[in-house]
Image 1 (tube, rainbow, N blue to C red):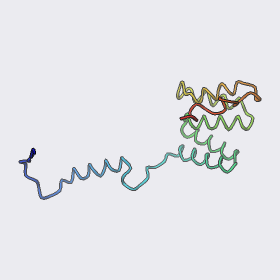
Image 2 (cartoon, one colour; image 1 turned 180 degrees about the horizontal axis):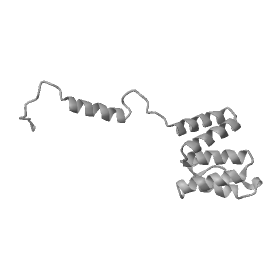
Image 3 (tube, one colour; image 1 turned 120 degrees about the vertical axis):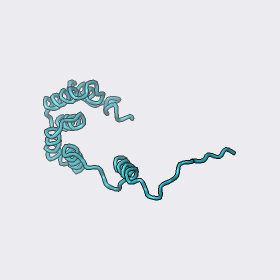
Length: 137
């Protein structure tokens, strides 16, 4: 058996700087018991998703638009593009795909949606192309 010993003396007082650092690290890791604040754009995105679940597509569209206006993101643009397509506004959907690809070139889901939008309506979202590539992950 190997025994290790430490020759340094321990201070009877806690090292407040070290405790503060540990507390800060725990807070950063989400162990503080508090939730990290959600940005306004993200909250609007979450609210839009909730409206979609209740079937309120017009309100969801307004909220996705507010999210994009607050902070354009690939996901907000992608979701708004899908909604535009459902509401029959293909050009707005394509514009959102273009904007999303400017933020994240090569995004497979956005590219999938863009290809589907270029097809005639009756041929969209069929068979193995019914869902975006991320659907299988």
